[in-house]
Length: 340
Image (cartoon, rainbow, N blue to C red):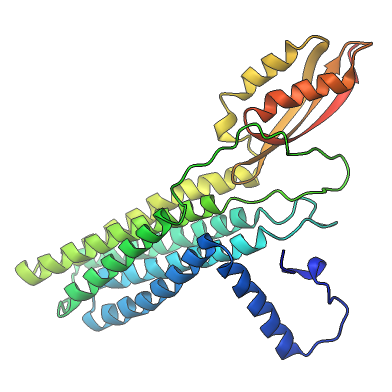
């Protein structure tokens, strides 16, 4: 693994020239981004999306089209989602250390939460501005507006194609992999984050942006053919609604992880697991079960296992651990207590 942070740097402690050091770190990040197909797709589409966002913003200001300006802001915030995804794909590969014993895999969760808040803010701003324009619609210069709108639609289609074929929509299994160990001391292994989950989140933004481009094309057509200036603010409100709707699942997921909520995918399975463990011969009961999501699709837990006297404690804990491993819990800490 590349030395992506201080703890992994073999040259730590050596003097370095600031300019050269910055260049070295930047080249390390770029090599890490280009090392994986998922991050390469993110980086390529980030450059394309950012370039066209400036084009849309310029034409929107020139033609006085709020719809085009709104779509450009949406693309700018899609760029933040892409950038956050890029950073997350690199940071989540950093190794655990004495201070961050679980590693840095929750970087993707923090990035998603912050990005969600920004998207809600911009959606509110666009919607409030559109309401004012509904009652006092300004004149929109529709020259070349249709061309730019279609170009934006094509850019978003490229993004959808890239992420669908880059692994964003391909499922994967979290079945009972007995290779995931268990440690009561320092972590001796890394809990790898899921790039596929990052790509799925970005893909949702790109799809919403594609629908926004469709709205701009429709409003451009209505303005050109019928002179209906109200189509522009109505389109803007639709774009704002799409932004808000697309960000709700992202916020729900990130808040749930940060609040240590039990994994939603295990809601229907944990009770069954408790019953199966209590049916193991020698087990008297379970106390203080806690399960949470470390990062996307990485589930962890802890519990107290009450056992009867004169039992093989190791065998019982392994049987109990196997029950939870089968439903996708990667690491389970079990405290064994004697039943009274």
